[in-house]
Image (tube, rainbow, N blue to C red; front, side, top):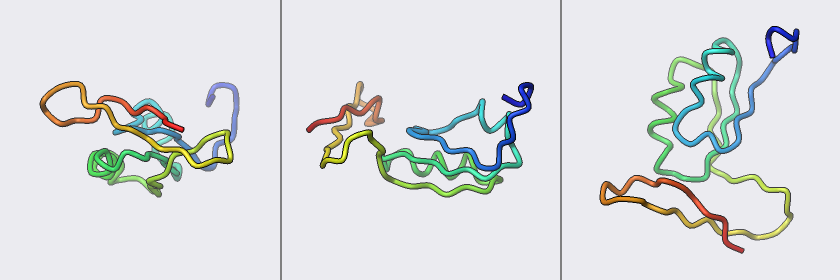
Length: 88
C-alpha cells in the first residue's frame, strides 16, 4: 500500500483479535480504530497497541442490519477463545 502511494490517515482493523502486527509495522504513526467483539482479547489489544493512538470498539460489524449473536469457541482447556461463530 505504501509502495503504491496510498495516503493512509487512519487504519481501521475489523476483527483485530489480539493484534495486527503487519499493519502496526507498516503504519506505526497512524491512528487506529480497532473492532473486536470478544472482550477476552481486550487486554492483549491494549498491551500490543499501548504506544500507538487507537480506539477499541468492542463491537462486531456486519453487512446485515439485524440482531446477531456471537458464540465464542474455546478449543482447549486453557479457556482462551480460539474463534467466534455468528448465530442468527
